[in-house]
Image (cartoon, rainbow, N blue to C red):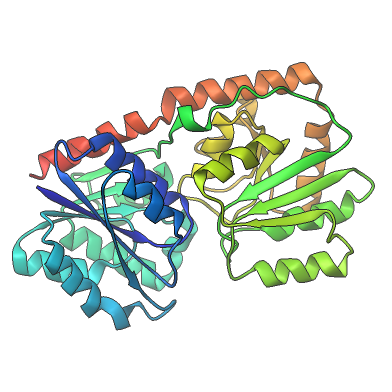
Amino acid sequence: MKVLHILYSDIGGTFDVVYSIIKKNSNIDWTDQIMLTGPKIFNPYKVRVKKLKIFIRYIRTIRFLPFLFWAKIYFKIKELKPDIIMLHNNQIFPSILYKLIYKKKIVYIDHNPYFLHKKISIQLVDVLSKYFCDFIITVSQKNYTYYLKKFKIKENLKFISNGIDIEFFSSNRVIKLNNHFYIGMAGRINETKLQELIIESLIKLKNYNINVTFAGDGPKIRLLKKIIKNHGLIKRVNFEGRLDNFQLKKWFNKIDLYVQASKGEAMSISVLQAFAASVPVLASKVAGLTEIINEKKNLGFFFHNNVNSIVKKIIHIMNLNKNNIKKIINKQKRYVKKYFSEQQMFLEYKKIIINLK
């Protein structure tokens, strides 16, 4: 049996989810295939899957004009002849066409943040997934509830938490209270993220020895650099660019606080990685993040998406003593090990794939 994963080609947590599934399966229960679509490809993906003896098929698309490439995607799917398509992005039209002609199966995995379901293009995918997909997986509880209430789907719908390679990111770092405090955020620098809030907080905290480092790239980077330049923060903010997993692991080791500033998430892989890497987490109080962070239980900290809120929380975290920080990171680590391992995630996906044979 062949299983084809179709997903976005640039940086993002979805690839880590797919990589973990393929790695754990190791072509034992089925044969895995990967197709990436998007404006550009993140080259480290090729290196990672090569170790698993899998070749990536890449189809370059243009942002906002995906329909121009539907035929090309369809013919590539036809060439690969999968029995099941695991659709991790919104390329649903060519997938449906293949399903109808060749009587194959589609599993739609909704990696979209909840707030994006207000967009007409995403709503169209939601409707089509209800009528043409054999199974729908959501990676957030909020999206699961959305499908239940809006589409009255009771069967063939499941919420599966994202999982990570905890052993790889695990770190027993020594807590040092230095004069300099390093804040980091990883991920796409686009309209769904709020890196500018971190920069604006740095403006208010100019009398503190704080440096900020961003891992990732995206269309909003010019805007951020302009803000940094206008406020004389060039020496205090660094853009690391796209980092592979080995570089990301080292990056986590040099930051004192991980911040996920966002309009909304599906389920943030970066936050889970920070938990495993023994880094305290501060995150926006929005859908997707409220499912994995619990401030009352010392599982990270929340801020509201405004400058005063994030400034207040950063100062609070900076004033914590060594023992308090140690308690927080140890609790985060136990939590991610218990609920968000890639093995747990893989077993849930495996059940669905095997049942669709």
